[in-house]
Length: 272
Image 1 (spheres, helix red, strand yellow):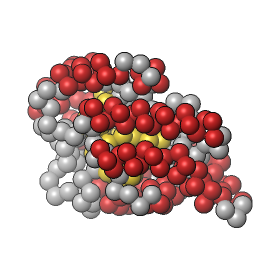
Image 2 (cartoon, one colour):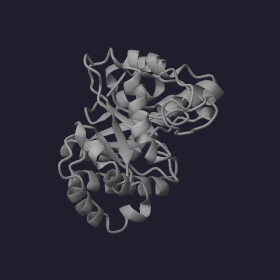
Image 3 (cartoon, one colour):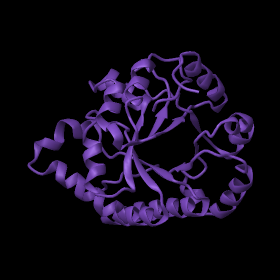
């Protein structure tokens, strides 16, 4: 990225309307959070999409959604649970197709327990990947068909390379890598993972999406940028070496802090 990158945000439709002028002043990428709950995906999601089309009129950035994740993992071993997970992913992609969304966030299956135990058996890593394929293969094909990327976001991940190997295993342009800066910083501060910029370097041009949030290395804070102790200069130096044009999505607990977060990085000369 040669010019200052443009920041986007993760919002729901109500908070997009609050920040409408900010989100329309530049082609800011948007991630809608209205579709994470099963109650929406099982219900009248079409009316939410219809509202989104009206609310987002005039928006020029890329649009995606945070996919469902509550209550399951994509490497579940229970075949009955797997069918539910496949259904949720399909429902999320129904939304993406109707909305014209170009990405859907999927949570990584790698846990802190995995980091110490996957190599405790001869095929632990291969089995995890196989289970993810059993869950996600239909979704990957569907994502290919509708022009949507499934971006796998680090959650508890300690090894930044394992998730990249998982994404690559699908052999599909529709599966890419996501980084959540606060999750990476938590894993660094509490569980011995490398720092956030190393996660970026490991992903390299497989990185197509990033959640920007600040944290203290102890917990998943989703603080406004500048309130924690992530080393943002190192993160954006690593991002600046990429040509994959990842969506830079500010994802905060308090959506009211999005303008302050954009201003913080702009004042540092890192983004706009």
